[in-house]
Length: 156
Image 1 (cartoon, one colour):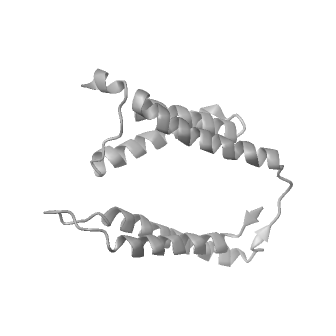
Image 2 (image 1 turned 30 degrees about the vertical axis):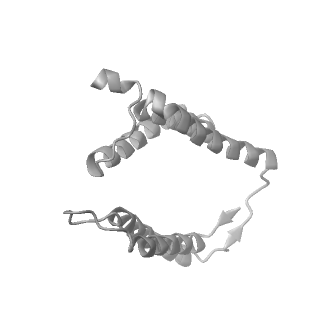
């Protein structure tokens, strides 16, 4: 099933607005110009802005709100759901041992490669870039260290 961009954009903008509203009451950090709600507010603002842009695109296309594109078997849906759950559980269990820099690219490569129908070259590139961006945002921008696992002994 394909859902029109108008509807998906409105849902995205609504979730962004809820995120902004919920982060208003987060407590401030002592001696800091920003508080705990700064990052969720920024993410919420991006969701609202991009959701409205997506809605505008959907409005201009004037297509059906819902469009059935073909039969999806329940077994395929179940396998995809189990793959996502396994990936999250694997991340939670393996990251303390192996560390984020090893687990994240491998996990993303496997998921993207499998879900894209075997486009492994693209999967490796996307996984490495996405892992590097996440690492940079958390470690450099937010100053939240991600677990290094066995790499901690190598680096330090």
